[in-house]
Image (cartoon, rainbow, N blue to C red; front, side, top):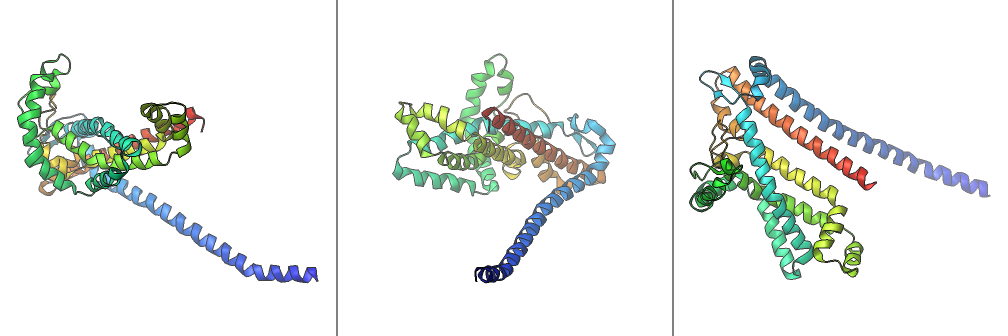
Length: 325
């Protein structure tokens, strides 16, 4: 009797087991297809950039990334000025944006009254939804004149006279320039880093925070010794997301950076970035060399982004190893 029951159970469960195996196989195949699709798209982008950039790379060689000259009339092109502008504006954006973002996130999770937490959080998230061209227009017509009349003269008269860093703040107050573009980028990346940082802070177990407070720790000590070490991986991810946004931003930077293919020691002087140069000149590019040089700029930006993300990944691996995880 028992054997008959077991046989009937096996025969009844076999179709279900076969269905589960089939569903698992379909699910595994679908996820594998999507993963390979991402790699295919990435490979297609790389191949297209390399193919389009080959004429410029053959014409100028490695000197393309070490030459400042950019002259469409004589067909002499160098990417040094856009590379410099891209890196400097991104560094300024991170130096300004990351501390402010962390401060807002810490306030929202540790100090903010309950009645104000939701409105402030929504306001921060709404900043992320503003189109970049709106930031550019606001920067050109409101922010740049404000900097020209108030902030930049102050920097010229104070920091401009300090030995060592004075050269960064010399020259006339144009309003637009590398510093202005960096500050606009800082405002643009602020909501992204803030939102991720706040969400990461909220994932920390309440017991850890309450235990630290119970031992007499201050809010600063809890944030410094408990919250940040516990959430370091997520924090680095949020910072890298903001850096990726800063490196590739186009329209807002194009409005306020001045679009000058020259490297100036002063942060107040006009400059350009890779994205801004491509956006400004691609529709006007005449000739294979000119077009190929702009595509080569895109390839350089791709390589810079890849290197930055790779270094971030290596840093996360080392942090995890030191923590013993």
